Amino acid sequence: MADLNTALKKLNLGLCMILFMVTSGTLFSQTTHNDLAGTWERNVQGTTLSIVFDKDGGYQVEFTGDGITDVTGQCKIEKDRITFNDTGGMAADEPGVYSFKIENDKITFGIINDPSNGRSGLLAGIWTRKNE
Image 1 (cartoon, rainbow, N blue to C red):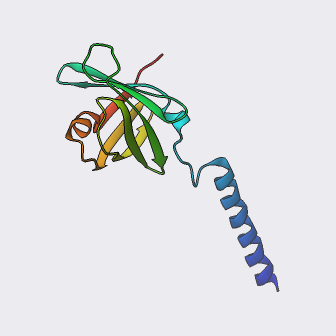
Image 2: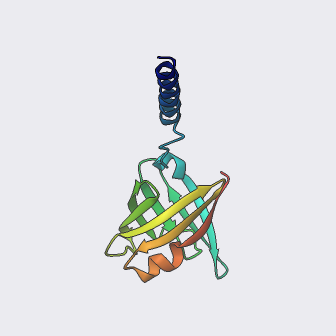
């Protein structure tokens, strides 16, 4: 009987730990649009590119260095993947899917599937959050 009580106590402790991890976001944390919100920059061949994410999944890209928005769109986040669906400006015809990871003030995009050579050539790589 003592072995059963010990086993039940260990099981109960384990379940409490899992419940704590789930409710605190430790076990199943997922990046949201709020985490992306703001301006991110990247330098490509001497030109500073910027992408501005809003909290609703919208984005604006400036890639010619003239300060004018070149592409607008909506993105969708699923775990560690983000799908870019351009809707305006020099928009790509089809969505592009990327892996992404945020560490400190850096975000890295990796190509999973993007038929647009233009978008993938500019987007893939490391971007830095601009302090606003």
